Image 1 (cartoon, protein in one colour):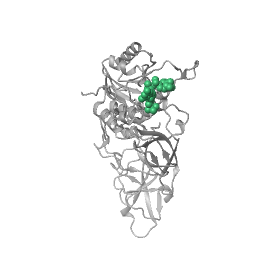
Image 2 (cartoon, helix red, strand yellow; image 1 turned 90 degrees about the vertical axis):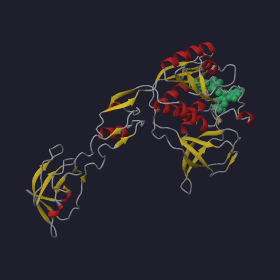
Image 3 (cartoon, helix red, strand yellow; image 1 turned 90 degrees about the horizontal axis):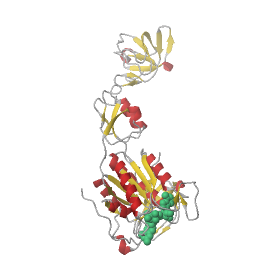
Image 4 (spheres, helix red, strand yellow; image 1 turned 60 degrees about the horizontal axis):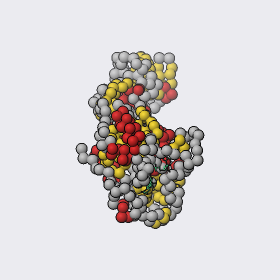
Length: 426
Ligand SMILES: Nc1nc2c(c(=O)[nH]1)N[C@H]1C(S)=C(S)[C@@H](COP(=O)(O)OP(=O)(O)OC[C@H]3O[C@@H](n4cnc5c(N)ncnc54)[C@H](O)[C@@H]3O)O[C@H]1N2
Ligand code: MOO
């Protein structure tokens, strides 16, 4: 496998045009993830009801037609429409009673009807079910005043699924709708990918547990709870979580232990250019490699992806908004590649800006934006802050997604068309 070495130059210089060439584009970073990360681990068999959140390792094919037999869609009377000759009303003798689950051996002969219930097999010879509200029952007879069309209220065998039809492709994530389709297709045991093992290491001597005691110049840890929640959205549990040592030797030890017990190690912080940023040197000291290190985006420029031994590594910036945004864009892409997930991610779509934008050209900006209604043409409008602040978490909760501002866009008028990627929700 060819992996790209870390960018040698330590100085990304933020928006300096001469240094932007050292960063890869979003599309290039995503292409490298897609090219180098493939599904990890074995597969396992699970009962259909125990598989929510898992990724299918084999396609699901319907074991029989669904429905497997013609059956009634309503409680009422099964009749043969061809016996309704001349003008109505018609009287039919009720000669049988068929409930759901009953053997479909009833045969309708002559001018007769069968009492039938929703889900019950249609008697041989019948071609319509008349709702009980549309007949008058009088002893053994029903009276019909309107002619039903052939096929009325009959759920035809195979109308939902043909036998052998592919109901779900491999790689689909199993939510309630997919589980329902598997069950209807007769798939009681599913072959799924084993859970991805993710380890999380947040670095920074100043970082303290959220809400815990802290001293001057210390901060509460936003990244551990935020990434735990982001991973839960992707159906992933963390197998190990720790606060990283802020020195090279300590980080080397922790990363090596985490890499040995996980498929993916996520770090936050410590990947910028200062001498206090030890994560990349620690990855390199372990013989690790980088797929890319630095993307021409704001926020999140230092985001890196690579490997430490057999484990993959996702290096997120320490600033919480940068970490959140880069996890949304690159973390979810990496996890999809490692789990083999093919389920469509929330699609990027076009929205229009509610107010003008003035910004510095250079990096493509992924600015949190809030859906704020529709314009006169029915296009969705977004509102947003004047700039992207990588450390301001306060307003993140009112954003619905990320607005993509092209790298060369310095001035955009109100009403400009921009790409918008909704946050993954669940
Ligand atoms: N000279 C340069 N300095 C910086 C550059 C640059 O190109 N040249 N890049 C800036 C950019 S852009 C970013 S983003 C940050 C990324 O820095 P690190 O990933 O090394 O992160 P840290 O320095 O460790 O922390 C940054 C910031 O985030 C706070 N933090 C860290 N962890 C947490 C946490 N778990 N919860 C809440 N907040 C956290 C930390 O206290 C810092 O304030 O570098 C710029 N510098
Ligand atoms: O790219 Mo950094 O994420 O601006 O703050």
